[in-house]
Image 1 (cartoon, rainbow, N blue to C red):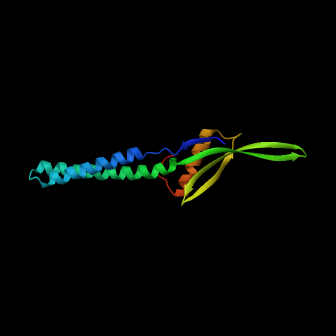
Image 2 (image 1 turned 90 degrees about the vertical axis):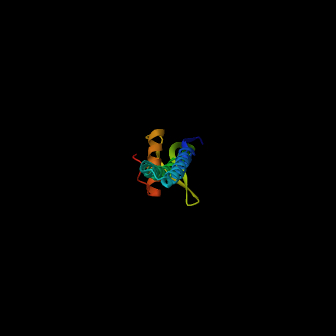
Image 3 (image 1 turned 60 degrees about the vertical axis):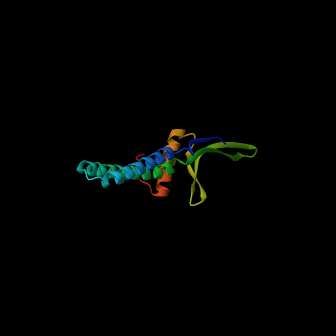
Length: 137
């Protein structure tokens, strides 16, 4: 059973990078705020704002990364049509973890739907299950 899709890759590298930059900006803002220069205080305010914006972006990336952690795969079903004869039907399924349990979701027939369409549908369904509406699909 081949696995397709996003796999388990996510944006955690960017997330940690944003957090590190945010921490550096906060510490620089604290140092600049201690100075008596008005320009330093303005710079401290700008650094604090950009720091909070980066933290917000890191939180958003973490939420969106949850959408990418899924697997899309095909399942072959054999059904008897007559005595001694069987037909094989191929279906797309997606699976992901939700509250510590694996959730398997039917996406559609492989004859009708391509891999790309199955991936888009899987991400959309996972977003509905997680109640995430931030990503435009």
